[in-house]
Amino acid sequence: MQSNKKIFTEIEGIVYRSTEQLLKFGSGVGRAGCDLRMAVGDLRAHINRYVRDGTFGHRLSVCYRLATDAGISVQWMDNVLKQLVSETPSDLAAVAVVQNSILFALAQDARILGKTEFTSREDVEAMLQRMKNWFDVTKELAAGQKDNPSYAALIGLAGTITRYLADVARPLPRMIHYMLDPMPALAISQRIYGEGSRAEEIAAENKVIHPAFCPNHIMALSA
Image (cartoon, rainbow, N blue to C red; front, side, top):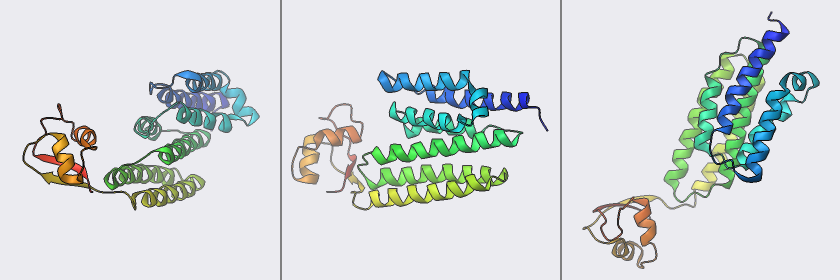
């Protein structure tokens, strides 16, 4: 069995590396960003004390929640998850830290998705696949580390996110591929939707350099 000092050192390393990713996402400005930096700094400075007094888990979860409040995205949370699944903890306490951190990260993904406005079913389906990939990886990791509580929690969270995204996708329009003669976005909007107010949407969706010169292959939301 490892000594307490070695166990604390291992936990400190895991927390430092994962929270470093939380701090790097770049949009943590304002009060929320300040709160995140303070919470992470405090946790790092007093981690051994917080492990001993039983507040460590709560304080770590607060760091993840504050990252979401500060504007972290699902895409950037991927970096946090990549760091966590790359960890190879040797002590059961460190395994628990990794597994709980993964749950905290995925729970915040759920919060972010709850506030995301999707515009098409394809966007939702892409997010469903993204989340499925992460749940497949993290469930396999939890199973390999024989962490049954984390495995059960991951299954529950995966089911909740899947049901939510499926409900969100149901009323949304699909992206349709159109083959048209080259024409301005305004004319395309009139051709597809019967009015020109969606020309900017078409130009943005197809990354058109100038809305007066659109290619003949266009993607647009179904009417």
